[in-house]
Amino acid sequence: MNFKKLLTRLSVALLGAFLLAAQAAAAEAKILKIVGTGAATVVFADGHSEAVKQTTVIPAGATIVTGPNIELFVETVTGAVTTIAADSRVLIETLDADNAILDLKAGKVASQIDTNRIAKRNYGVRTPKGVAAARGTSFAVIIKGVQYTVSTSAGTVSILDASGAGIQVVTAGQVSISTVNGGTTTALSALTGDAIKEATDAAGIALAAVAVVASDTTTFGASAAGSAATELKAAMAVVVSQLPADSIAQVVSKAAAGAPGQAGAIVSAAVEAAAANPATLGDMVKVITESAAQGAASSTTDPSQVKNIAADVAKAAVDAAPATQKDAVARIAAENAANGATQGAIQRQGSATATEIAANAAEGAAKGASQGASRAIAGELALLATQGALQGATDVRVQVNNQFVMGRATEGAKEGSGDTTLQTAQAPAQPVVEQPTVTPPSTVNPDLVSPSQTP
Image (cartoon, rainbow, N blue to C red; front, side, top):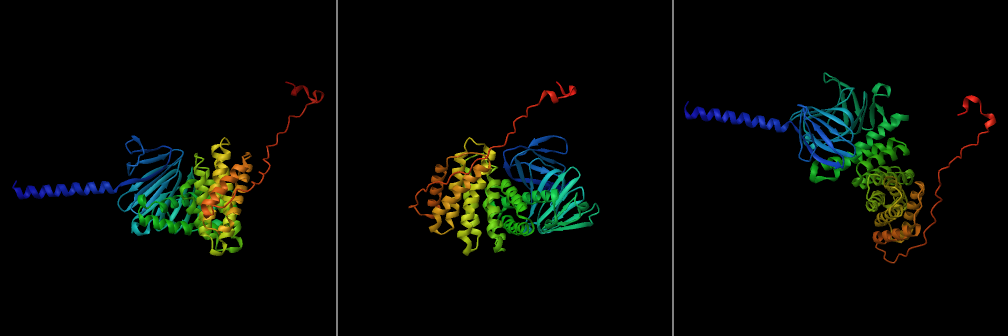
């Protein structure tokens, strides 16, 4: 064989190896971010398994299994980020440079599509109904046995049958739940009973995932983060406009618990949406700030973090309020962010540090609310934040040192407003902590007991 032919064959072999390597690289999902302290495992097609790490790459045919207290953010195909929630099992069914189909066996996933990067690639999540295929959207899928929920918070999802034909379309503000009219697409506003709980659960998961992507340009890139920020506002506008107040509270609490570091962004989007209806803005700010602070605080075991949570929630509400309503919103946010943060943290951490938790919540809420409000109401905001924290402690049946809480709230208002002349006022009395009613056992007259009842 002459040298020219040998060189040609080597070139062909090297090109083939390069193409195979490129194809293999394209057929692996990447772990972009791991959130939480729990464990997750990848079970490969050959049966062996390994713990998930930041560097783990996942080929087609592998199954991702998450335990409690962990979420995985996975890039399955360029332009699509999948959030796999805790206690979920997902088979990577199809995976190449242009297609990704995940088979959700059990649990919950949220998907966020970056329209600037996904181009003509296909992405979908298999359900018992068919494949939920998305382009330019964020959506969540929940599987419980043969029951499923597909909820769309932005854009459109098409549910496809085995042949690829469309069965139905789920648009923003709609949901397909297997137990509701056989999975027929239904508006969020039309749901009742258990169905609305399923829908709010799905919406909260999706919003948390979108908020995390929107906040992290380093991990996900500026394009994906920008797309997620837009979707967060659009999705929250749907939630606020379609759901009743108690369901909005559930969505916001769920989202903030799933993404406590982004509680402020979640509140900002919700208050901005609520401002479209000035007549109900005050009531909505109360619901949003209390539920967001409670959800976020319920996810932390560090009492010191409660201050940051309450501050972020209160400040975000004031910043998102119309210019003419900032002081009014600040009053509501100071009280209710402190209330929610106190409740959530004590419920999670117990009563041993209840006074510290309440003081942190009051200080943070007063600081955050004061940063966007008139300096003249800083003292009032400190008092309201104290009242909120005391009420939050009362709601979970705990007594705290009210004057200590008031002093910390004043420090927060000083820092937020820049008014160093504020003096600590007399703290309000904590509401009466109601103790659970215990009914004493009744005395039984032995003369009225039949023989068959006698021990």
